[in-house]
Length: 289
Image (cartoon, rainbow, N blue to C red; front, side, top):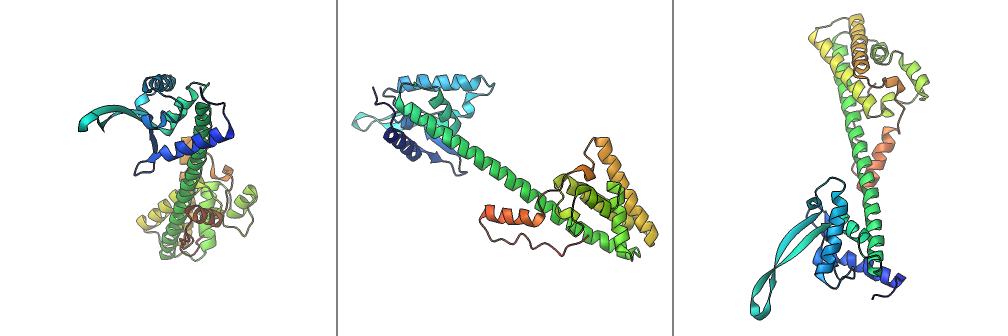
């Protein structure tokens, strides 16, 4: 019987499991069952197969197919006198190894070490996955903020061609329609400093509502051939109200009730740090209203 679990046993088992770890071209971790069998303290393949079957049964209770994490394969091996034979093996995902460890013989110190190893690995991947999800959301918000900036450039051009001179009143009308209040009141309501850009602290859903308002207002002014400032201002407010009504009918949250988020400059800085790159994400066009 193996020695009781000690720090040396734990360190050696974890180090050996790390060495046995393989990766696909896509960076997905996997292990071969026959390679980790002795690491987990099983002298006989048949005994290890029983532990694998217990792990499969535990996974099957979730209603999923064990083949998602336990893949049977056949490998060519050299037999006696130069002959070749076939040996069965199993490709195990990280989660499959975790289940084997958790359902293995608890009397084996190697199993206790494997439980620690795969628990740490699973937690580490969960943290990495969460970080990647946050990164994806940050990039999505940056892309939409840039799209809104470009959309405002097109809207300003359409307003200019329509004869708009008072651009502050023109843009305020769009916000009044969408938010039901002026820009100044929006900032007071949301506790945003008057010098800060509303759209720079808007989250994805709020940006999406504004992107739709901007694109539809641009189309209406151009398609209706508006050539009057008052009509352009009224058209912008009308489009804002239409978008607001659509949000109401869909059961969505009103934009004024969506909480401000971290400023877009901070998000871009965070993304640069996460990517480990000095890529200039802040090379967006000159800020528009």
